[in-house]
Image (tube, rainbow, N blue to C red; front, side, top):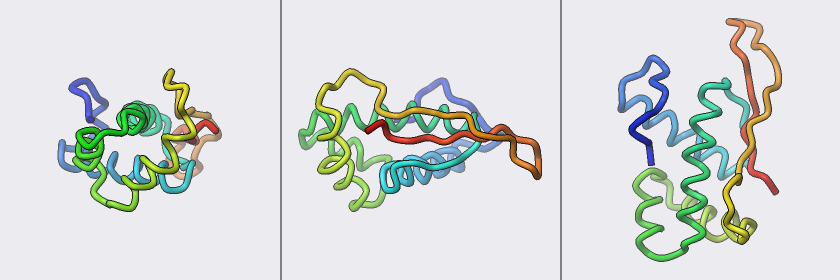
Length: 116
């Protein structure tokens, strides 16, 4: 799931994988999250690839999704609630909307949301 070319975000590989696992799980669970633009762009890539897996719907796809998403409830929600909304299967399952500049460190913020 995590591609070979990815933003490092000043983290080692384990921290980065845990960060994206949490962000993608939050997008699938809540439908939208707010984060920095760099994290949002990477989260969009990973979420779109997971929705593609869920659209396949077979056992192997479910196991591949389970490799990244450790919570079985999130995997179940991905396959039973999120994927059926996107039966056209043409990509673009999530969108990134730039929102504001964070006050504390002036980071550009964005919303990542599932397209409905």
